[in-house]
Length: 308
Picture 1: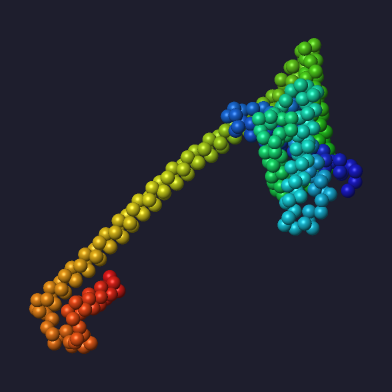
Picture 2 (picture 1 turned 180 degrees about the vertical axis):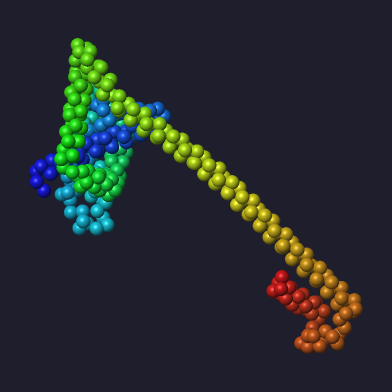
């Protein structure tokens, strides 16, 4: 790969991921606060921190032998993304604060933070985001830009992008150091530059809010469905227990009735006489009445248990 093609690739990746990062920031802050927010240090729809972060990660990925690591490749990739993205965020946050005395993000209220510039929670999110970006988003980005766009067209698009980017950076820095107090044209230029980003943030923010609302509605419907299913299952369990108890009572009542009827028949001599009993039970010739009754009761109960 020549130096020109390498620079071409770097410029594309920085531009694409700076814009994508700005979109992520707008959606995240809109969902978090419930209000449409135009995020970013610059006036245009770019967040250079994301561009620098992805360039650093892509460079490390090129150096790591991920293909030879097999299924455990996600471990070094996750750690590299977590460390590099956090380092870029730390340097950017520290530099912006000490140059312009302004914080664009502050993690001071979160545990395990460093000066409010980085925190463990966001570092873990950067590592997870790195896995998603490298395995899914980056191949698509490379295919749609470096591999597809003709180099002449690509250079023209990149030239226009970086001219606007440089102008936006110059205006933003000038306003930050107070030049807009002497040059009113800077405020007008800044307002015109924010027109595009304001429009884009409005579209992204409204879409994010609508999506969040639908997700909340779906969660409510799912909770109601789970409650109804739980109530139905409990009702079915109560019915089954009631039926089981009823069948148990019917079985016990049947046995009692059968034993009572048999007892009356044996004691009254209406059905069973001594000869019929001896023919039915030859080995009961020398049994006492109590022993014979217990045997007949056991026979009936065992037989009815099998047929019931």
